[in-house]
Amino acid sequence: MRIYSGIQPTGCLTIGNYIGAVKNWLELQKENECLFAIANQHAMTVKQVPQELRERTYSFFAQFLACGLDPEKSILYVQSNVPQHSELCWILSCLTYIGELERMTQFKDKSHKNEDNINAGLLTYPVLMAADILLFATDLVPVGKDQKQHLELARDIAIRFNNRYGETFVVPEPYIAKQGAKITSLQNPLEKMSKSDKDQNATVSIIDPPDLIMKKFKRAVTDSDNRIVFSEDKPGISNLLSIYSAFSGESIESAERRFEGKGYGDFKITVGEAVADALRPVQEKYAIYMADKAELDRIMKEGAEKASHIAFRTLRKVKKKIGFVAD
Ligand code: AMP
Ligand code: TRP
Image (cartoon, rainbow, N blue to C red; front, side, top):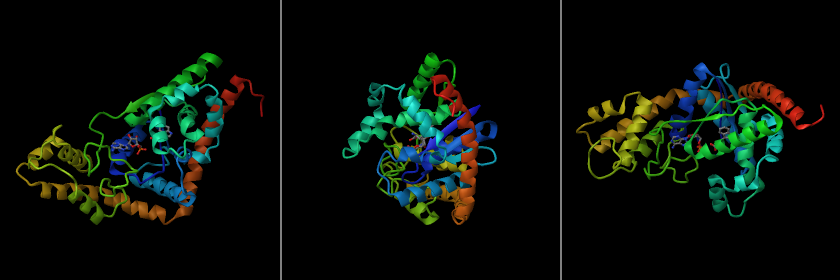
Protein backbone atom coordinates (compact mmCIF):
# COMPACT_ATOMS: atom_id res chain seq x y z
CA MET A 1 0.00 0.00 0.00
CA ARG A 2 1.00 3.59 -0.53
CA ILE A 3 1.14 5.54 2.74
CA TYR A 4 1.49 9.32 3.11
CA SER A 5 1.81 11.54 6.13
CA GLY A 6 3.23 14.91 7.00
CA ILE A 7 4.13 16.93 10.03
CA GLN A 8 4.48 20.68 10.36
CA PRO A 9 7.85 21.97 11.56
CA THR A 10 6.46 24.05 14.40
CA GLY A 11 7.36 23.86 18.09
CA CYS A 12 9.36 20.74 18.84
CA LEU A 13 8.64 17.06 18.26
CA THR A 14 7.29 15.62 21.50
CA ILE A 15 7.08 12.12 22.90
CA GLY A 16 3.36 12.46 21.98
CA ASN A 17 4.37 12.80 18.32
CA TYR A 18 6.77 9.91 18.78
CA ILE A 19 4.19 7.56 20.29
CA GLY A 20 1.21 8.76 18.24
CA ALA A 21 2.88 9.22 14.88
CA VAL A 22 6.54 8.30 14.34
CA LYS A 23 6.29 4.90 16.06
CA ASN A 24 3.39 3.92 13.80
CA TRP A 25 5.31 5.15 10.76
CA LEU A 26 8.26 2.94 11.70
CA GLU A 27 5.94 -0.07 11.66
CA LEU A 28 4.26 0.97 8.41
CA GLN A 29 7.54 1.53 6.60
CA LYS A 30 8.45 -2.16 7.06
CA GLU A 31 5.75 -3.43 4.71
CA ASN A 32 4.57 -0.47 2.63
CA GLU A 33 5.64 2.23 0.23
CA CYS A 34 5.70 5.27 2.46
CA LEU A 35 6.22 8.99 1.97
CA PHE A 36 6.79 11.25 4.96
CA ALA A 37 7.05 14.99 4.50
CA ILE A 38 7.98 18.00 6.55
CA ALA A 39 5.00 20.24 5.77
CA ASN A 40 6.77 23.60 5.84
CA GLN A 41 4.28 25.19 3.42
CA HIS A 42 1.51 24.37 5.89
CA ALA A 43 3.58 25.88 8.70
CA MET A 44 3.60 29.22 6.83
CA THR A 45 -0.10 29.74 7.52
CA VAL A 46 0.95 31.14 10.88
CA LYS A 47 3.79 33.68 11.10
CA GLN A 48 7.27 32.14 11.15
CA VAL A 49 10.70 33.62 11.64
CA PRO A 50 12.54 32.53 8.45
CA GLN A 51 15.78 31.45 10.12
CA GLU A 52 13.88 29.49 12.76
CA LEU A 53 11.70 27.79 10.16
CA ARG A 54 14.82 26.70 8.26
CA GLU A 55 16.55 25.41 11.43
CA ARG A 56 13.45 23.53 12.56
CA THR A 57 13.08 21.94 9.14
CA TYR A 58 16.61 20.52 9.45
CA SER A 59 16.01 19.54 13.06
CA PHE A 60 12.74 17.71 12.35
CA PHE A 61 14.27 15.96 9.36
CA ALA A 62 17.25 14.85 11.47
CA GLN A 63 14.84 13.62 14.16
CA PHE A 64 12.95 11.56 11.58
CA LEU A 65 16.20 9.91 10.55
CA ALA A 66 17.41 9.47 14.13
CA CYS A 67 14.11 7.78 15.08
CA GLY A 68 14.67 5.21 12.34
CA LEU A 69 12.74 6.47 9.34
CA ASP A 70 14.92 5.11 6.59
CA PRO A 71 15.49 6.98 3.31
CA GLU A 72 16.30 3.64 1.65
CA LYS A 73 12.83 2.32 2.50
CA SER A 74 10.66 5.44 2.58
CA ILE A 75 10.63 8.71 0.70
CA LEU A 76 11.50 11.45 3.22
CA TYR A 77 11.37 15.00 1.94
CA VAL A 78 10.53 18.63 2.54
CA GLN A 79 7.24 19.77 1.01
CA SER A 80 8.53 23.04 -0.48
CA ASN A 81 11.22 21.13 -2.42
CA VAL A 82 8.52 19.49 -4.54
CA PRO A 83 6.81 22.25 -6.57
CA GLN A 84 3.97 20.01 -7.72
CA HIS A 85 2.27 20.49 -4.31
CA SER A 86 1.45 24.11 -5.02
CA GLU A 87 0.61 23.40 -8.64
CA LEU A 88 -1.98 20.77 -7.78
CA CYS A 89 -3.20 22.88 -4.88
CA TRP A 90 -4.30 25.60 -7.30
CA ILE A 91 -6.17 23.16 -9.50
CA LEU A 92 -7.92 21.52 -6.55
CA SER A 93 -8.80 24.87 -5.03
CA CYS A 94 -10.97 25.50 -8.10
CA LEU A 95 -12.94 22.36 -7.15
CA THR A 96 -13.35 23.29 -3.50
CA TYR A 97 -16.12 25.51 -2.18
CA ILE A 98 -15.39 28.32 0.24
CA GLY A 99 -18.27 27.07 2.38
CA GLU A 100 -16.52 23.72 2.81
CA LEU A 101 -13.33 25.42 3.93
CA GLU A 102 -15.06 27.81 6.29
CA ARG A 103 -16.67 24.87 8.04
CA MET A 104 -13.33 23.32 9.01
CA THR A 105 -12.89 23.25 12.80
CA GLN A 106 -9.17 23.94 12.57
CA PHE A 107 -9.78 27.03 10.43
CA LYS A 108 -12.25 28.34 12.99
CA ASP A 109 -9.86 27.60 15.88
CA LYS A 110 -6.84 29.11 14.22
CA SER A 111 -8.73 32.21 13.03
CA HIS A 112 -9.78 32.73 16.60
CA LYS A 113 -6.21 32.39 17.87
CA ASN A 114 -4.62 34.53 15.14
CA GLU A 115 -7.13 37.31 14.73
CA ASP A 116 -4.52 39.64 13.27
CA ASN A 117 -3.49 37.13 10.59
CA ILE A 118 -6.49 35.34 9.08
CA ASN A 119 -4.74 34.87 5.74
CA ALA A 120 -6.06 33.05 2.68
CA GLY A 121 -3.58 30.20 3.29
CA LEU A 122 -5.21 29.46 6.62
CA LEU A 123 -8.48 28.92 4.74
CA THR A 124 -7.04 26.90 1.85
CA TYR A 125 -4.75 24.82 4.10
CA PRO A 126 -6.86 21.66 3.63
CA VAL A 127 -6.65 21.99 -0.17
CA LEU A 128 -2.85 21.92 0.05
CA MET A 129 -3.15 18.89 2.29
CA ALA A 130 -5.43 17.22 -0.27
CA ALA A 131 -2.83 17.97 -2.95
CA ASP A 132 -0.08 16.41 -0.79
CA ILE A 133 -2.04 13.21 -0.46
CA LEU A 134 -3.55 12.94 -3.95
CA LEU A 135 -0.28 13.58 -5.79
CA PHE A 136 1.02 10.22 -4.63
CA ALA A 137 -1.94 7.89 -5.25
CA THR A 138 -2.10 7.41 -1.49
CA ASP A 139 -4.16 4.54 -0.06
CA LEU A 140 -3.74 5.27 3.64
CA VAL A 141 -3.04 8.43 5.63
CA PRO A 142 -1.98 7.98 9.25
CA VAL A 143 -3.05 11.12 11.13
CA GLY A 144 -4.31 12.26 14.49
CA LYS A 145 -8.02 12.66 15.17
CA ASP A 146 -7.78 16.43 14.67
CA GLN A 147 -6.92 15.89 10.98
CA LYS A 148 -9.83 13.58 10.23
CA GLN A 149 -12.03 16.39 8.91
CA HIS A 150 -9.27 17.51 6.52
CA LEU A 151 -8.93 14.00 5.26
CA GLU A 152 -12.63 13.72 4.62
CA LEU A 153 -12.42 16.87 2.54
CA ALA A 154 -9.49 15.40 0.59
CA ARG A 155 -11.66 12.38 -0.17
CA ASP A 156 -14.56 14.60 -1.28
CA ILE A 157 -12.25 16.57 -3.57
CA ALA A 158 -10.82 13.36 -5.08
CA ILE A 159 -14.29 11.94 -5.71
CA ARG A 160 -15.50 15.26 -7.17
CA PHE A 161 -12.52 15.42 -9.54
CA ASN A 162 -13.00 11.81 -10.61
CA ASN A 163 -16.69 12.39 -11.27
CA ARG A 164 -16.07 15.53 -13.29
CA TYR A 165 -13.00 14.49 -15.29
CA GLY A 166 -12.93 10.69 -15.12
CA GLU A 167 -11.10 8.27 -12.80
CA THR A 168 -7.82 9.97 -11.84
CA PHE A 169 -7.18 9.99 -8.11
CA VAL A 170 -7.04 7.19 -5.59
CA VAL A 171 -9.51 8.05 -2.80
CA PRO A 172 -7.43 7.87 0.41
CA GLU A 173 -8.50 6.26 3.69
CA PRO A 174 -7.62 7.73 7.08
CA TYR A 175 -5.66 5.61 9.52
CA ILE A 176 -6.37 6.89 13.00
CA ALA A 177 -4.46 5.16 15.75
CA LYS A 178 -6.66 3.55 18.40
CA GLN A 179 -7.65 5.29 21.62
CA GLY A 180 -4.94 5.21 24.20
CA ALA A 181 -2.43 6.54 21.71
CA LYS A 182 -3.21 10.05 22.89
CA ILE A 183 -0.48 11.27 25.22
CA THR A 184 -1.54 14.15 27.42
CA SER A 185 0.26 17.14 28.91
CA LEU A 186 2.37 16.45 31.99
CA GLN A 187 0.95 19.58 33.57
CA ASN A 188 -2.68 19.17 32.55
CA PRO A 189 -3.40 15.49 31.94
CA LEU A 190 -6.81 16.28 30.48
CA GLU A 191 -5.25 18.06 27.51
CA LYS A 192 -3.28 16.64 24.60
CA MET A 193 0.49 17.05 24.82
CA SER A 194 0.95 19.63 22.11
CA LYS A 195 4.19 20.46 20.36
CA SER A 196 3.38 24.15 20.53
CA ASP A 197 2.54 24.28 24.26
CA LYS A 198 4.17 27.34 25.84
CA ASP A 199 4.62 25.60 29.21
CA GLN A 200 8.01 23.86 28.98
CA ASN A 201 7.09 21.45 31.77
CA ALA A 202 4.00 20.21 29.93
CA THR A 203 5.82 18.51 27.09
CA VAL A 204 8.86 16.29 26.68
CA SER A 205 10.76 16.78 23.47
CA ILE A 206 12.49 13.89 21.71
CA ILE A 207 15.73 15.83 21.99
CA ASP A 208 15.45 17.01 25.61
CA PRO A 209 18.63 16.04 27.51
CA PRO A 210 18.18 13.21 30.08
CA ASP A 211 18.38 15.45 33.17
CA LEU A 212 15.68 17.72 31.77
CA ILE A 213 13.50 14.71 30.99
CA MET A 214 13.91 13.54 34.60
CA LYS A 215 13.05 16.98 35.93
CA LYS A 216 9.88 17.19 33.84
CA PHE A 217 8.65 13.76 34.93
CA LYS A 218 9.35 14.54 38.59
CA ARG A 219 7.14 17.61 38.23
CA ALA A 220 4.34 15.77 36.39
CA VAL A 221 0.89 16.47 37.80
CA THR A 222 -0.82 13.41 39.32
CA ASP A 223 -3.45 13.11 42.05
CA SER A 224 -3.42 12.67 45.80
CA ASP A 225 -4.33 9.04 46.31
CA ASN A 226 -1.29 6.84 45.98
CA ARG A 227 -2.37 4.00 43.68
CA ILE A 228 -0.67 3.29 40.38
CA VAL A 229 -3.53 2.03 38.25
CA PHE A 230 -4.81 2.87 34.78
CA SER A 231 -8.28 4.36 35.10
CA GLU A 232 -10.37 7.18 33.75
CA ASP A 233 -10.51 9.03 37.06
CA LYS A 234 -6.69 9.03 37.27
CA PRO A 235 -5.68 10.81 34.04
CA GLY A 236 -2.20 11.81 35.23
CA ILE A 237 -1.17 8.33 36.39
CA SER A 238 -2.82 6.69 33.37
CA ASN A 239 -0.86 8.98 31.06
CA LEU A 240 2.41 8.13 32.81
CA LEU A 241 1.58 4.42 32.54
CA SER A 242 0.91 4.81 28.79
CA ILE A 243 4.20 6.63 28.30
CA TYR A 244 6.08 4.06 30.37
CA SER A 245 4.53 1.20 28.42
CA ALA A 246 5.29 2.77 25.03
CA PHE A 247 8.94 3.33 25.86
CA SER A 248 9.72 0.23 27.93
CA GLY A 249 7.70 -2.23 25.85
CA GLU A 250 6.11 -3.59 29.06
CA SER A 251 2.31 -3.91 29.03
CA ILE A 252 0.26 -1.55 31.21
CA GLU A 253 -1.17 -4.48 33.23
CA SER A 254 2.28 -5.82 33.99
CA ALA A 255 3.53 -2.36 34.94
CA GLU A 256 0.56 -1.89 37.29
CA ARG A 257 1.45 -5.13 39.07
CA ARG A 258 5.11 -4.24 39.32
CA PHE A 259 4.46 -0.77 40.74
CA GLU A 260 1.86 -1.98 43.27
CA GLY A 261 2.59 -0.47 46.68
CA LYS A 262 5.24 1.92 45.28
CA GLY A 263 4.91 5.68 45.77
CA TYR A 264 4.27 8.21 43.00
CA GLY A 265 7.74 9.72 43.46
CA ASP A 266 9.55 6.47 42.65
CA PHE A 267 7.14 5.73 39.83
CA LYS A 268 7.78 9.08 38.14
CA ILE A 269 11.53 8.49 38.33
CA THR A 270 11.15 5.06 36.72
CA VAL A 271 9.03 6.51 33.91
CA GLY A 272 11.55 9.32 33.34
CA GLU A 273 14.42 6.83 33.20
CA ALA A 274 12.59 4.59 30.73
CA VAL A 275 12.01 7.56 28.41
CA ALA A 276 15.54 8.95 28.78
CA ASP A 277 17.06 5.49 28.15
CA ALA A 278 14.93 4.83 25.08
CA LEU A 279 15.71 8.25 23.62
CA ARG A 280 19.47 8.13 24.29
CA PRO A 281 20.41 6.30 21.05
CA VAL A 282 17.99 8.52 19.09
CA GLN A 283 19.65 11.62 20.52
CA GLU A 284 23.13 10.32 19.70
CA LYS A 285 22.14 9.78 16.07
CA TYR A 286 20.41 13.15 16.00
CA ALA A 287 23.62 14.91 17.06
CA ILE A 288 25.56 13.18 14.30
CA TYR A 289 23.04 14.21 11.62
CA MET A 290 22.84 17.79 12.86
CA ALA A 291 26.61 18.10 12.72
CA ASP A 292 26.57 17.28 9.01
CA LYS A 293 24.15 19.61 7.22
CA ALA A 294 25.64 18.67 3.84
CA GLU A 295 24.55 15.07 4.40
CA LEU A 296 21.08 16.25 5.47
CA ASP A 297 20.88 18.36 2.31
CA ARG A 298 21.85 15.34 0.26
CA ILE A 299 19.18 13.10 1.82
CA MET A 300 16.56 15.87 1.48
CA LYS A 301 17.45 16.35 -2.18
CA GLU A 302 17.29 12.66 -2.92
CA GLY A 303 13.88 12.39 -1.21
CA ALA A 304 12.54 15.40 -3.09
CA GLU A 305 13.71 13.94 -6.41
CA LYS A 306 11.95 10.64 -5.76
CA ALA A 307 8.75 12.41 -4.63
CA SER A 308 8.86 14.79 -7.55
CA HIS A 309 9.18 11.93 -10.00
CA ILE A 310 5.88 10.43 -8.81
CA ALA A 311 4.19 13.83 -8.43
CA PHE A 312 5.16 14.90 -11.94
CA ARG A 313 3.43 11.90 -13.48
CA THR A 314 0.22 12.48 -11.49
CA LEU A 315 0.18 16.14 -12.40
CA ARG A 316 0.75 15.42 -16.09
CA LYS A 317 -2.32 13.17 -16.06
CA VAL A 318 -4.37 15.81 -14.18
CA LYS A 319 -3.41 18.60 -16.59
CA LYS A 320 -4.42 16.53 -19.56
CA LYS A 321 -7.79 15.68 -18.03
CA ILE A 322 -8.68 19.27 -17.21
CA GLY A 323 -7.79 20.60 -20.66
CA PHE A 324 -4.42 22.27 -20.15
CA VAL A 325 -2.27 22.19 -23.29
CA ALA A 326 0.91 20.10 -23.16
CA ASP A 327 3.99 21.91 -21.86
P1 AMP B 1 0.75 17.70 15.49
O1 AMP B 1 1.84 17.69 16.53
O2 AMP B 1 -0.57 18.09 16.09
O3 AMP B 1 1.13 18.43 14.25
O4 AMP B 1 0.52 16.20 15.06
C1 AMP B 1 1.40 15.45 14.27
C2 AMP B 1 1.15 13.97 14.47
O5 AMP B 1 1.52 13.57 15.81
C3 AMP B 1 -0.31 13.55 14.31
O6 AMP B 1 -0.34 12.36 13.53
C4 AMP B 1 -0.81 13.25 15.70
O7 AMP B 1 -1.65 12.15 15.73
C5 AMP B 1 0.44 12.92 16.48
N1 AMP B 1 0.35 13.48 17.83
C6 AMP B 1 0.53 14.77 18.17
N2 AMP B 1 0.40 14.95 19.49
C7 AMP B 1 0.08 13.74 20.00
C8 AMP B 1 -0.20 13.28 21.33
N3 AMP B 1 -0.17 14.08 22.37
N4 AMP B 1 -0.48 11.96 21.51
C9 AMP B 1 -0.50 11.14 20.45
N5 AMP B 1 -0.23 11.52 19.18
C10 AMP B 1 0.05 12.79 18.96
N1 TRP C 1 -1.95 19.08 8.51
C1 TRP C 1 -1.23 18.00 9.15
C2 TRP C 1 -1.09 18.27 10.65
O1 TRP C 1 -1.06 19.39 11.08
C3 TRP C 1 0.15 17.84 8.55
C4 TRP C 1 0.04 17.43 7.13
C5 TRP C 1 0.32 18.19 6.02
C6 TRP C 1 -0.39 16.17 6.64
N2 TRP C 1 0.12 17.48 4.89
C7 TRP C 1 -0.32 16.25 5.23
C8 TRP C 1 -0.80 15.00 7.26
C9 TRP C 1 -0.71 15.16 4.42
C10 TRP C 1 -1.19 13.93 6.47
C11 TRP C 1 -1.14 14.03 5.06
O2 TRP C 1 -0.96 17.32 11.41
